[in-house]
Image (cartoon, rainbow, N blue to C red; front, side, top):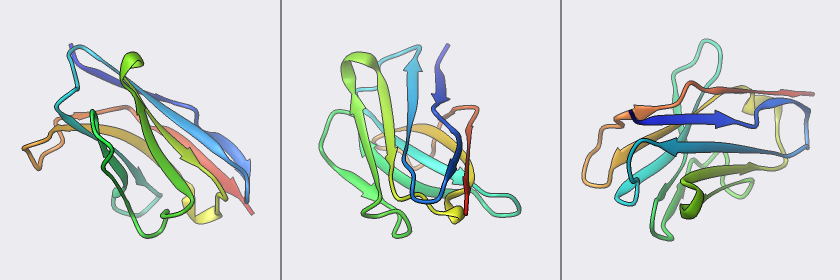
Length: 119
């Protein structure tokens, strides 16, 4: 059974940092594209950052570029999202997702972790 489990969310003040983790299990993800999405109340889910599991290619939404960093630890089957200089508008539920590198559809999603940034 494939599972993605996020952790690391919380309540922080503006300007603080948080690191989210996504632990993947159930099969190998060496050919998968891993991504972080977020959904704020009343808004659509949006792409935040993504990375090829076994490569160095990363992509970021313009709103987080320069502040967030996505990385992975293949030995631990874990993807991270380091978030710095957090802003109140970063408040959302953050989700980890995985898709095959050749597919446009994300097949697996985590349950989400809440990030709240106070001003």
